[in-house]
Length: 214
Image (cartoon, rainbow, N blue to C red; front, side, top):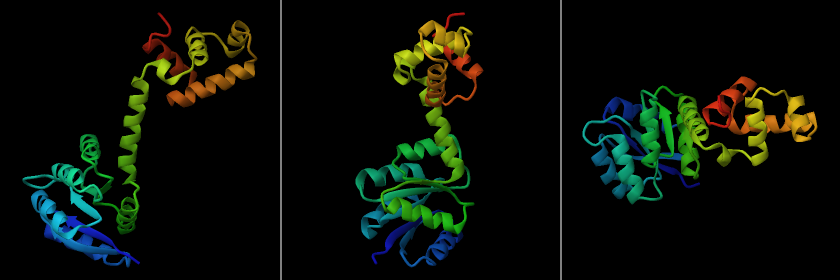
């Protein structure tokens, strides 16, 4: 079985040694080298041809994000996983823009680190739970920023407008010559698309987007 070749990049020797020890326990992973800064990491990638680079995000000189950007642009087949003590939103988003396929906390269990290496080496991605939540929140913000017509059908916008104006499901059904069940189905789809849970949130959305005029 061909092993996953890993390069470990961190400016602390004790951290690199710890990661190497953890990965050595997996028969399908081989640590082929290490680097202590972003510049050395770029050189080592060219020399050692790893499949995966485990990269500390915070290093003196060229940091992990800058190094990841350089590596992923030059070596298309190399996957980068960012390692960090902190899961800040800006770092997460910048790392992904730089081409990182994974983002994991240094506090993670050894099994999670191994899972991340295996996932990205096979073409997938891996984000620790805290990072996944940051990405989900960002996606939700982008969805809510879109114009209603980009998300909802004309009928759904029509129903949302009536909901925003204070009509009940039964009243909306009478106005639009629909069954109450059909209105409920449309309302459920609207909530699902907008990632909202309550009627009052639909009303607020309709007002915010100008569907309902106060």
